[in-house]
Length: 417
Ligand SMILES: [Zn+2]
Image (tube, rainbow, N blue to C red; front, top):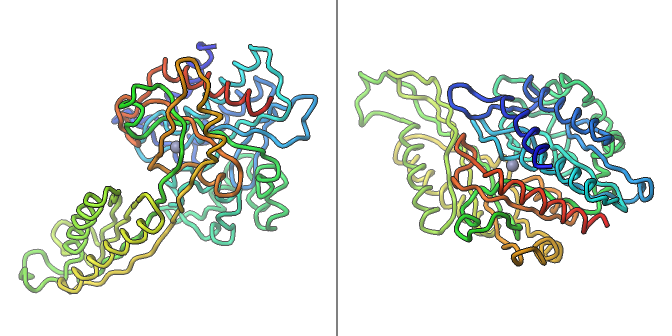
């Protein structure tokens, strides 16, 4: 069984990996995404699982028992896309572990009393169309197709056109509304067809490292959001424009980035500007416009609102001093998610060596979207010794991954008994 895990892991290792950085570029609905999908379908078929897809590029491979095939299923899985230059584990670890857990259960002679599905949600990272958990949001109705169809990637490609280019995906099903979306089984009918969802994920913080535990269970996800800050000023010559005559939006942005850092640091929260677009983006010109994206996270919905408001207020004040203007647009905001406490306790209890720790996370996941849609949801985390994520340095030891697989198998056995 460990061989299967390692074989699957080494199959995936070269797909989308940059030779220059060792990191992954697995953007959704691209050529490499097609390779990842083909790999998943092949693994599912090898196990005799029935693969279903929906209009949004989400996939589920079902293990349907002879008795109980029509009952609501237990869903597990994660995503295969990555951030730009991401790590190997964020996403794929949950998919590979889910397939391996099915193998473990079968080798134990376990027969589920309800379907067990292995899911791959599309565009979880939001690296192409800017919406985190886009596939699960569309599948649960949290994001409407009317809004999503207007989304474009950095090259101006519409989501519908990107989806239409994926073999087996027909976004026209989404056009007809809820009826069309549900037909493949992972659309709006998701909550009706799924009893509960368990997502295994590499840990992205340091909790498990500090506790010396290989595996943990999630209690909650912090509320988080993405906000676009458009700073506008006046383009002018970098040499002939006196310093005191400038209306420089880069300066307002820079001071905003510093203020955001101070603000979040003082309150034990998170604020990050990680993406920037500058126009005209010339070395010898004062920019006319700087667009910066803020990623903000806090322990409560109110605290998140206060944090973003405080950053925006300081930025607006700076803009007044710099002669520039600012507009702030929330692009995607996710409320706090508290996972089903009974389910978390059931997942965490009674293991060899005692209960697993139950810990919060500051990272968003498809599990949060399904939980918010009313599906009882749990998450398992596998220790990440580097404590680095969304970067090539992200890591998990194989021994810990195998503890994760057996933890997931135990959990599925309890839920699908
Ligand atoms: Zn992830």
